Length: 103
Image (cartoon, rainbow, N blue to C red; front, top):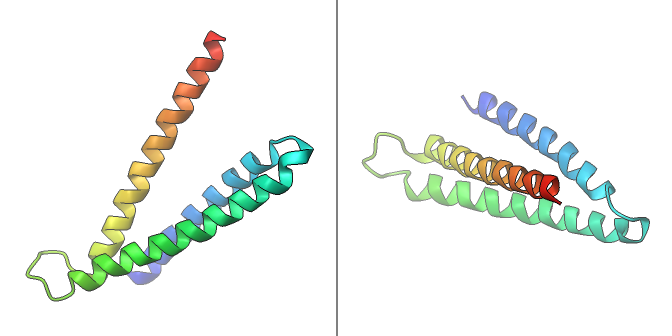
């Protein structure tokens, strides 16, 4: 179970890393250093907060009388957060494309 979750997590990080890097390189040459710094900071901060959130959920529910507790619940919470983030990004992208068509 854990190896499958780590595999899915790794694939997701790999896919998002490529997309984020391509966004960071689509800037003017004078801003590429700033974009790289923002990208790295966001990746480090997101990883730290994500791990903290998963561990918080897993630890807080370890001894609870719930149908799903501990590490599986932590992964479920992480998956839900990723789905919410992906939906928000897709909606923002669609809005930006729509505004670009109107200009």
